[in-house]
Picture 1 (cartoon, rainbow, N blue to C red):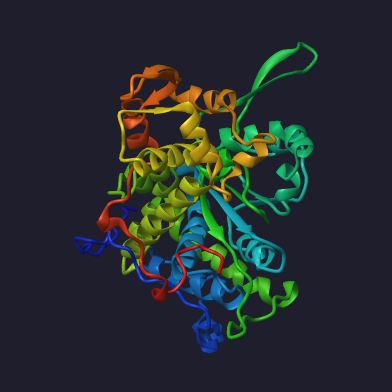
Picture 2: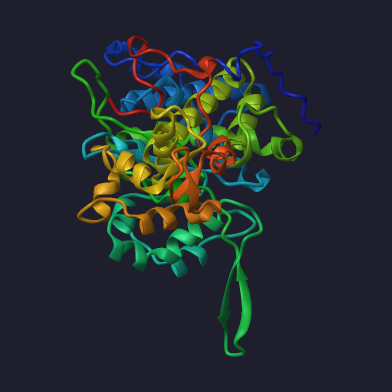
Length: 425
């Protein structure tokens, strides 16, 4: 059987660059109502390649039925991620799905319930060793790893150290061809164990940066008063979700070879593109409005996470603080270490107070800047004095690479337009 080329609608010129509209709290209750029984296709019926958009639409409806999602972009991302698990063999990268929340009762476990019942070949755990995980991964048909309460694995220094091997395994499994090696058997032979598998992790607070950087991040929030969702009962509700799972699998399996050859245009680059590419391919295979929705979600959600990193990443925050310190005095060619530290430590919302009784020290500043190849030196200042300091041109390349000034056209929508994609209210 020859698979026809799925129809893909043309994208508007600004589909990959414009900020899309986002959901607002208080959506009408009937927007999450389940479809009538007559509208749910029986999983045993034949599935056509052209049914992809309809199946994804059903999945999107079921997600919104049980979970108050933070935005329409988040719904799109979760639906496409679930579908992508059914073609794991076709992907070069296995995106992680990070379902995080600022505190309990934000719906993360409920979303993981829906994900569990619709992904391919689920492997769910709340606590597992690295050995148990990699011995459960089949290279020919990898499972979808699902981890609830993932914050317990990394929330403290002791827990993070204990689970460092698990973190390394999750990171390695993002890319194909990164096996773990173990000595096994009576002959003590070195054996390769595959690590490649898609994984969803749910927890309170952000996961380790290396995992978040490889993930489609869903930032859950507590339901507002006007947001209504249906209760979830395993015996009653899983059959409909399993039917969607089976239809997804039936739709996508004949498209395996075609999906392997696809290189879709992406609105992002580098690791973000690696992570989102399987989701965009699924959207292009489905056609209808899904290609536009996928790229809009990709751009909006990755832009938001980049902003999170700019504000929360320690070294990136330091670079931004240094740029502000130079700008505050007219961007001189050189700035003394003493003046720079005074400016940084004056920011009461910055984390520098944790570096000692007097905040960030010259030694601490040197250590933070060392990975960028930036260090202080004796400098001569306009008044003729000499002191340890930094030249502004030392930072220009680093600023451009790690915290570029936002362009006017990249400004996010105003707060009047609703919450940003994937954010907690």
